[in-house]
Length: 581
Ligand SMILES: Cc1cc2nc3c(=O)[nH]c(=O)nc-3n(C[C@H](O)[C@H](O)[C@H](O)COP(=O)(O)OP(=O)(O)OC[C@H]3O[C@@H](n4cnc5c(N)ncnc54)[C@H](O)[C@@H]3O)c2cc1C
Image 1: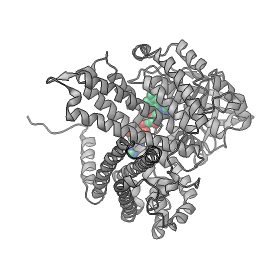
Image 2: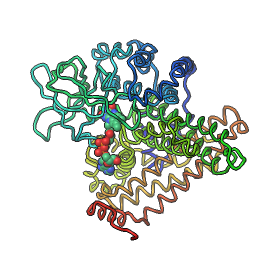
Image 3: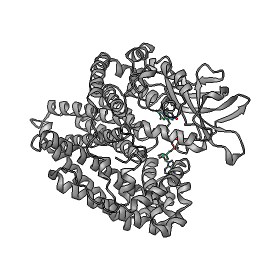
Image 4: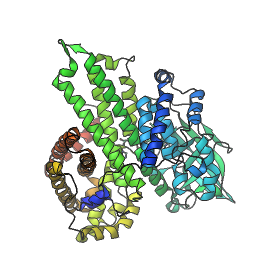
């Protein structure tokens, strides 16, 4: 497998690099045994708190004793290498562990996830040996819990606009600023802080620093009163003239943006795993609920509309699980260019979870709205996944613009016009520029590999679904080409068209993951035993075909401009102006 090839980048140019996705990734036996042992005792721990979780949701805080239990259990050590005292789980194993925690409690999953997926991941990915030796053992025991500090009152999606400053003073950096909504803020001792280093405005660039709670000038605000994830700690983190030794600079000065995006990309399978765990719990709840509720002298599970909801949940859960596991597997295989695929898995899994939470509540009817049932808390807990770690809207732009960048590079006659476009596609997503430069050569190389237009290793039972995928690929490549030729530089202003491209890409990638997984299932247990999984592939491929047909037809015929004009009209009036009175 080529380690620096992105399946989706190639796909946008019509090439199917099936060796990236086949065979479906599988954990090595030793690692699987470790995970099974961890999951076994994890279930015991979480089961013992089943009644506490709703109470802590209501009180809006975990008691310190529970955080201590998480420490003692080793839940802060999951991804830390064994030589530093950790469990050394790789991406797939870590994602599977977060999946299990999420089945019990989203606040607990986020507490553990913010530590491992983003809080200390910068140290793991970009720290030097001395920094790792200094902090990883304490992070592994949970003596230090980690937090990731990027967001500020004036800077969310536009991460490059942060105001926190780091001024060099002798051997130290002096950091001042305010960070907002920091997960684990109230319990963390280790903060990965992003600040702009000093210099003239145009040269001020983001850098990443390790800041610890004991440094004078670090303080945290009160626990935020949130809609969901209420027991997890979310606070502001204030930095008032904090002296940070130069040895705490993470990676290179001025590379903070790349570091932040690298952390978020690498941590996405944590959130994805959590989303899959949430869906599995919802399917358990909804199936039991539907079979115990009787209306019109029948269990409601016998009604077609209820069956459709449950069936859809199962298909979406399988699809999300396939995509998240695939991305985790790619990372574990050492693939370096997985940012688009990771973003896709986050968007798909978080939206599938949201739809499942909404439908499970619907299956429960009025009970779903009552606090004595778990659904309302799950709906509240679930909503944030579409917002944090990159909003799904921003990620859609990221997915499509990144891939179209390569297509643009390939359209030689457009290359010059497009040169500046991808330099600043979305303010705050300047990382695309880095990719643009990095990928230009690769893009040209890929374009010559025109032979790879089909899958050759999928199970024959999936022939019709393979054809849908290949048809979709041709539609994607021609849509990308068409959009770039039509809009050129202005593609950046065509967000609705870009989001449609992203939707095509998202569904094609997830379909490819499903086909890969079902192919493995068929080869392992034979087609008859894999009958239900084949059926999932058929249903999902049918869904994908409809989505692509609709997105492609809207490229030429849509009401985008009218819709935007209507929004402008609403902005002008700041209200809905019509009435039937
Ligand atoms: C519970 C919780 C925990 C969090 N934990 C952390 C943490 O640990 N560390 C951390 O650093 N941050 C954290 N955050 C912050 C989170 O990452 C941000 O909320 C998120 O990045 C979005 O930023 P924002 O809320 O400022 O929204 P904004 O960026 O203001 O966006 C508002 C809306 O506008 C859209 N939008 C913005 N720009 C564009 C554009 N160019 N084109 C189209 N649409 C656009 C967005 O998609 C969104 O729908 C947390 C937030 C919450 C609520």
